[in-house]
Image (cartoon, rainbow, N blue to C red; front, top):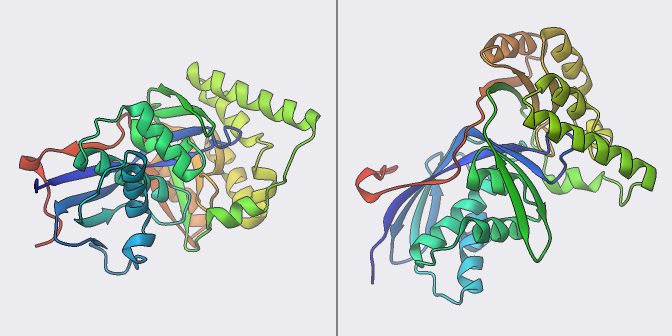
Length: 306
């Protein structure tokens, strides 16, 4: 049986950017690193022993890899998987999508499927149910996507030259709970207004007009009006962001992390000032990145465990 040994680095992501709900994603410089080796039986664990993983067959990485094997009617061999993550779990920074993309890419390599980026993007989007985080982790940069069960179409834009200040709370917020507060439908009038705000956001991003983009982010009508109740400090941190020169402040994905888009090289100072007023949040300055998942060849593979 062929022996495999390689390492994947999958970027985390932020998503939605306000009104780009379930469509816009942005890769960030926090990574899930996955060491893959052939083995006699399946074994998946984190280098951080504090992270409790479910049984192998319930693990997102395994489920995504196994789904690929089912789709292409291939037998997935047992693997030893060691993960090391810089992406906080259940905080709206793409930890689930990174695991899913890692599982799909592992199956693609081990089963020698030679899947295209479009095929991988569609599988990942179907698995997660929306394309924003998954396409960002797969492709890098800023991704704008539309997704149905039949296809996923994505435009990839260059990563913007800005800083992102992430205010990360101690509490988790599962996406399922965050989706439960959303309405089943919007009125036609509301949908037109919400769509027009999203359109201007995208146009502003393409023109690199982050002042206007920030305004449009905060005008979101798709999810912020309903989810802000789950993250009580969002309004106050948004107001403070305005005082400090942030372009815009929004939830990262479904939350609970709050992110401020700020001018390049201003992130550290702004993060410190926000943190002084909100010491119950950990702040990190994130950078958008232009690359998605990468595979390190065997001669560069990093051993994560002795």
